[in-house]
Image (spheres, chains in turn green, purple):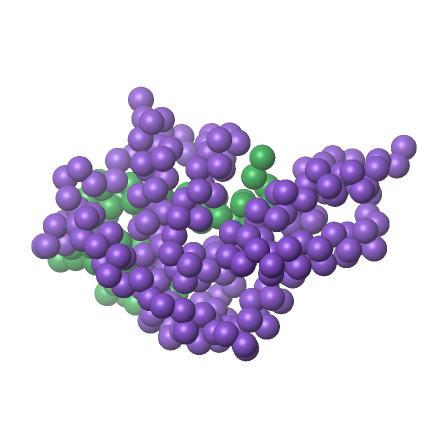
Length: 60
Length: 192
């Protein structure tokens, strides 16, 4: 079972590379039972969205 | 009516300079990038109805100038030669997690209320920029190449001389730190 610390590493890396099957399954299981990491994952997606917007000059 | 391009450019200049400085962390290089962008913009002579569309166009030129500068800097003084901030960054991670790898109780990420709405608020972007600026230089530069300039990890490795696995570590630390900073500086106050 992944720890939260390991899960956050994978949640970062999934933004930069395709995770392997074992990693994807491990992460999916972890996020299912861990609210904090599930929030973290949504926040990672939001960070990306904010950075893209910032990089395209779309920030007001 | 032809809007006054020079005064438009002057009004947007501080925004462009801030954008370039955040990413290059070098006032002189940022100034060069903005200067070249303004020259290209004046030569390009496009017309835009709205200032926001004009700014988007200028930022797209500036982004390319910044990438050019990063490439030439990469040849002269690769980022890999910059000092790592390992100790401080390890301490940051230790402050978030227990030794068994669980979130510390007070650090567990809570749900952010309507984060998309924040993107429309100027004050959010001031906090966002301050959080980016707060990252250690090497971390910030790698992170912005990836997320703001949109380069792939492979290209970042090539330009910086950092290994792929190190690149992942740096990006992970940047995301942890940036999330924590936004939590503290923005979302903690916005929670209902």
